[in-house]
Image (cartoon, one colour):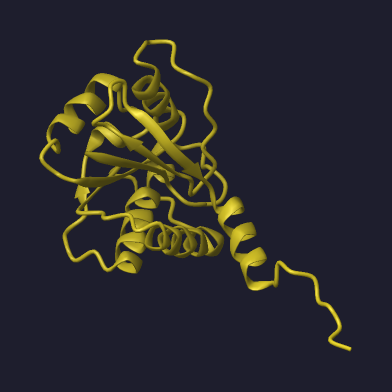
Length: 176
């Protein structure tokens, strides 16, 4: 199975009250990040057949926007293991539910999402220090032992790639 771990897109400033914070939705920049990252997944030919999200509004919106842009026609599944309070044991249980799928996109939150990623690829409790900005996506090949991180991209990098791709990479020369 190929696992795509995505941190929810930009939802503005966190609220102090956890009940209000859970209902915090994406801001304009976050919606743009979703569209940009979905286009990157299409360009990378990511064959997503399942999308799972944290129950928090900002993660669900991220999953929905990305799924829509990918042309995903299934229902986004919701799981507490991807919420900010989710544990690695819950995450492993969640992964075991999807072992028959080819490619799964899971949308969650920091800090637990990058802890899950680092523990997956190192195979130990200490993990590695990995930074996932808002809207970042990591591709992990779970068929390798230990699982292998194939790539990790964030909206800033994708924006820079798109900007440079629209400009000619060759200097102009005169034809005199």
